Each structure stands twice: as C-alpha cells, then as structure tokens.
View 1 (cartoon, rainbow, N blue to C red):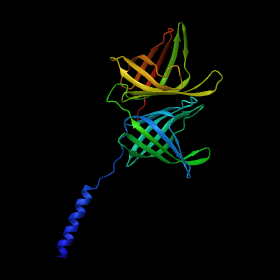
View 2: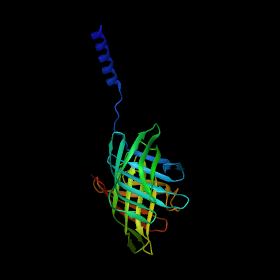
View 3: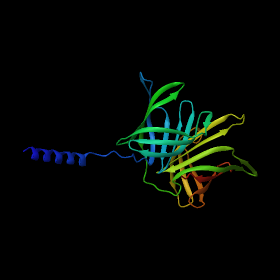
Length: 263
C-alpha cells in the first residue's frame, strides 16, 4: 500500500513539473507608445500621462524619443539591449535631455511584464534630484507588420543643407530609427549662442517604391513639423549605409548620410 502511494505521489510530482510554465526572456522587437509614467518616492505615487514617448526595439538595439507638449522639453536615448528571464538590460551609448547630453555608456536593468496590449517596465531604483524613486512605465504596442530595408537604428555620419549656391554643414550628433512602420530621430546640437539643444521627432513611415519613403511626424520638438508629412528620397549603399534627401518648398534641400548600428 505504501509503495503504491509513493508511486502515485511521484507520478503527480512529475506531471506537476511538466505542466509548470517556464518563464522566458521577453521578446521585445516592436514599436511602443508610452501610456503612463509613475514615480514612487517610498511614500506615494505620482503619475504622469502627458509625456509623448515612442520606444523602438529592434532585434539588438533600442531607441526612445520623448517630448513634453507643455514646454517642448525633449529627450532621447539609443543603445543596445539584452533580454533575460523577466528582465531587459539596456546599454545606452548616447542620451540627451533639454540642454544636456551624455555620451558615456550607461546600463539600466528593467523588470519587464508582458501585457495583452504591450508591456510594463519597472526600474526599482533611480536617482532624481538626489532622491531615490521607483519608476514604472506602461507601454502600448503599436507595431505594424511592415518591413523595409531601413529597419534598424542608424547614426548620422554627415549632413548638410543646400540653399541655392550655399551649402552649410550640420554640426550635430543625430540618430534615427525605423521599425515596424514607425520612425524617430534624436539630435544634439549647439545653437547660435553655443548653447546645447536636444531635438526629436517621431511618427509613421511607408515605403513608396524602392527609393522613396513618406514620413508623417506625430510629435516633435519642432511644432512646425508635428502633424506634417514629408516625402524623402533615399539611396541604399549596401545594407549598412544610406542617404536621404528632403526637398522643401523654398527650394532648399537637406541631405543626410547614415550608417547602421551593428553589434
């Protein structure tokens, strides 16, 4: 009798082990809008829903762009990431906010919970104004199934503006991402009084043939382009380089050259 009981228990344990779900690393590739951001100071939660932020994960890289509509303060960051059981570690190589930038590598470990609409990320401890906070962000997945040769994250290696006979080289650091039907750019540059500035824009894009895309800016630091669509001529130079040209109504042109971020 005892032998039969032990055998029955062993069978039950074996079945239980086989049916227990195994947690896996979250699959992050896609485009996501941030719905809310909550800071907890150990006493209370402060929730924000007015920030406009898009985040893109490719297979290996991540980029986010953010603008606050009330004051046009912008932020962005770009880098690589790895996924483990229930977590994502982002290794940011360049970031900027308002009038400052950081080109020193930073790593952030995020606790990730996949939801039916997207995901929730938690950073248990961050420092802001010398205070410690727990940061929780909720994201909604907005990816489309669109594919393009531009899918990935790119760094601008050269750019200039042509207006008649005048050509002006841009002095700035700029990154751009395309993925799942969405695009974004983030730039750091100095204005006419040598004050550093951060500018961003993000929205949707579609391919129009092999050498044209249409970008529709949904949000941007620059009110003049928010909500506007632009036809962009592109030229692929292999898989890892491309250049783009935007022609404006006043006859001027913006020409930019990009190199793909690679591991």
